[in-house]
Image 1 (tube, rainbow, N blue to C red):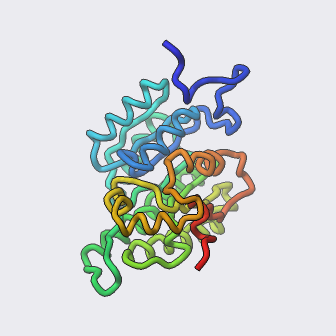
Image 2 (cartoon, rainbow, N blue to C red):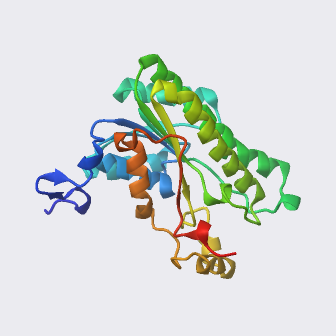
Length: 269
């Protein structure tokens, strides 16, 4: 049977070897589907031991099996990122099984498609709990362990271009992502002295379970037509930024927000 494409080598080298991530321990929240699953699979292909965190363990088992079938290593972690005790318990389990996670992908999140005047308190609270408070909680739990162990670490928050430029129709989502962008910069400043880098990736429009119906609607297609590259993103389009920020190849980068959006942020008004 031929070797899977993602593991094929050139002159004896894995295509991910440049990033030197082999045997690093990574934690990915929201890893059961969508971009989180892709991030986990990419890091596993690069040689990381990946902790897969989500509330729904049945989906995590499928992700873990796919990773292991490709020769990777994954550990499933039932974790509600809005529950600090569950976060601590999940990280402790990962640490006992593989070591302290030195790479954190703060990916878990949600959206509420409502403008400001129609946003309900319940939906707004849920969006902020998942998109802003939860990344804070998980980052703090990981960073405290890294500091205690005097270990070098990389925290990558998954923000959004809506946190960098205003958008209508999803007020709580956009504001929560703007908060995540600022949080990235604050944590970068405070944790730099501990050799912990904190950066963010700000995706543009990528098709996921959260937005698939919208992007395929007439309104969604109008937005895609305003992207200079005239398409939505493929998950693989995020691999370069992900692997760079996870690795020591970006060891002098912290507090950086990297848009991956097909030029959307620089499109004409």
